[in-house]
Length: 134
Image 1 (cartoon, rainbow, N blue to C red):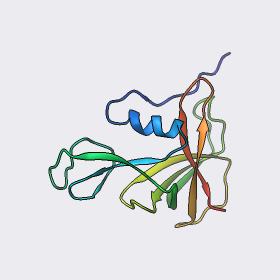
Image 2 (tube, helix red, strand yellow):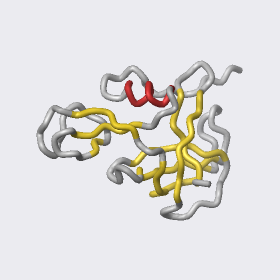
Image 3 (cartoon, rainbow, N blue to C red):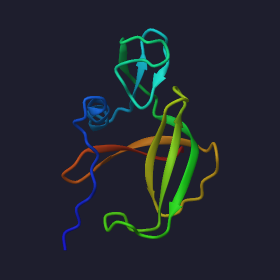
């Protein structure tokens, strides 16, 4: 039996540049050039000030652990349990929280410093993932 992993839609008009940057080893977020508010999920229109002047900005690639859960019951063959899903709040845009996948059940604590790394999926996109900062 062939196991096909699940891939995100990397051609979406609102998020394709996020995945293009990840393929280059860069973490980005969208922000409003008029009011400087980070926009997540990313949109071309700022719901805070109403401007249509938004752009992708490079992030440092660091953050703090906001939340996590460890999955102990396998629900898809491409994701053997246990694995941990993390939500990381970016240091340079705290309103942006990104999700990542970690193998196993690592010892994590709230507000733990995290750093991004990039996982190139076989025959698929490159995804930003997270690990405890060194």
